[in-house]
Length: 563
Image (tube, rainbow, N blue to C red):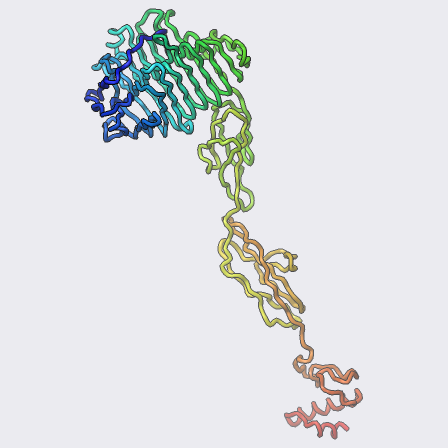
């Protein structure tokens, strides 16, 4: 289908438009050839928001140095009328002499609502009048989006005008869509309805369309009350150049219904060829899902009806350097590669197509561990990376996603145990430490060597009986919400008993054994040379004396009495 051209504006042309019947803002000193929702960008107006029009929300800004229009969560219901007064209106109108970049931030919506009173028989979401200007629409991720909704031609438009058209994006230069989502939705019309229309006019050949790592929905509306071979509806119509869909792009292109067999209709019309490279494409139309030679490096399927219930056939991979394959016999086509998703420490892995939603669940933590989010080797964007059950969209490659875990927060040692001092072996078990305290768990102890515990941990205070050095290890065993603390130790000493200091046990000896003949008795007094019998007699006399008089005998008296 050919489209009649619209003459170029001169530099002095003043843009005229309406905002739902309200006169458009007057042109400022320097006009940049760009209008959005009926408001023109100029050297005195570089930002459009709700202070400019009640029909706006979010912001639209223009940088004349880089020729960049930035849409930030912007939406509008206004329109720009054709500068020559024709009954045509546009959401975004561009007549600048330079290439244009449209940068997307967040969700942006350009809407042209139907209005029976305005007789606007050509409705276009974006229109570039400059035949040589190229356009780039770019974001950072698929969540940066632009939706263009033309609305439908009214019954009056359809009945009155031979050429009533609705087009989402209409231009002659080349168009690049990258790292974003674009929904170009054309409404019902009489003569033509296309999601994308890149066409030739007055000796200018149409530019190419490249969709590079982007998600695109292109929909043509239904055609009504029109008979003739110059009418048509398309999801994507690139009249005289190539369409390239690459790098994990996801494209859905469909046309509406037609009322006669003379009308043209394709999901994707690529007269000079369609390249599908590591991407996913769904196309459908009542005439031909895809028209033009197709070169694809991933396989697919085709059906001979739009519903996808009849004539199923497999579509093989084709030679990218060859002539391509003709798929015009199919009214529904699905082309997509399949890739493996591996889930480490969880479930949900398997084989998926590009664009499929992969639902994953992390394994329950074991021991004193907590789930600590998902990571991926391929930069996957998770619906919620901090949720144990989440999802992601399958990219155009095999991926591994991993559920990660960390230790629970450690219990707290509020007071460390300390060694008891002055311990002397006495034949009985003695506690070795002064106990400590903790929160988030139980403080436990164990006996060990200098390097590690050698007994099981328990809450009882460890004891020791024999003289020597003891190593008491301790740690806080965390409760259900806390992990254990790192073990530490206390060094404790029990000194040996001094036999000369043993208390009198009442046997007539000062806790000592009889003289062993080494020059000293066991209480370390000098040896007096007495025989064992003499010592026994002396001890007996001393005991009797003490019992009789209530005091110890004098040494000289004991010598006489013993003798």
